[in-house]
Length: 318
Image 1 (cartoon, rainbow, N blue to C red):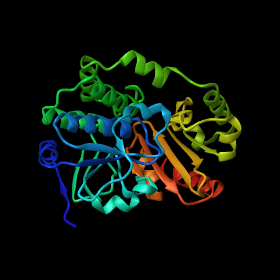
Image 2 (image 1 turned 90 degrees about the vertical axis):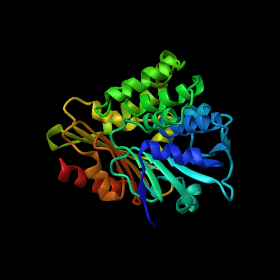
Image 3 (image 1 turned 180 degrees about the vertical axis):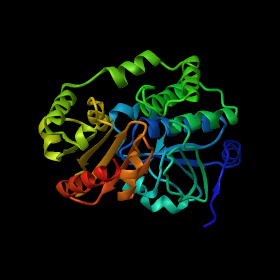
């Protein structure tokens, strides 16, 4: 298959010249993939296009409101499929996997992404996919309303840790400012996304402190969380959102890996790192990817075996 990397202007022209869009998000959807698909869908509809987000069963209540009124249950023959914030086919939900070779355009910002579509717009400089979507909507001369601004702000803020991560750039702040100007409820969103914790989440963080393994003289951290512990503490997927960043906050830790059982015999790996360390160097060993500061992978191993393999990889890359 011939593949072509597009500029923003070229991707905008593709969107302008096609219709009947179905937008695909990734597994364990975060604020960026949900917010980005919502904003793109709303923008395309503003242009008079038929556009939907393909319903993703894994979207949790934390972000589901962004997709309200935008989803459909299944892709149809003749739809223009566009994946958003999906770095590789393995990141697609299992229900979406049969659609992988039908995706016409991939919009993504992961530097270690896997090329799997005929056309792609990939910008690893963008801190979030939502920034890229904002640029595309500007190129399409879409007038951002409050709903678009809210969606882009959610994607941009969550993928930068509320603008604290090293991937945050001047462009990131510029997009966030434009979101605020267009009506995004910045204070309310920040309160909900970054200032509020459930008791269950706090209990999980306490468990992680007690069970975290420090390596490399305290520069590395590894935490493997059994599914039974999540069930015992009563945490939801929303409670566990971005929990992988927590071990990295320990003083002296430069790179941290968190493993979670997914209930299907696999383990989800998330790695977070400060500048000077490369999270993708660890995740790529297991077929994953992402950014130097944040990356992930799925290991087809029981938790104990996955933890041993990740520990070895961490030490090798430190």
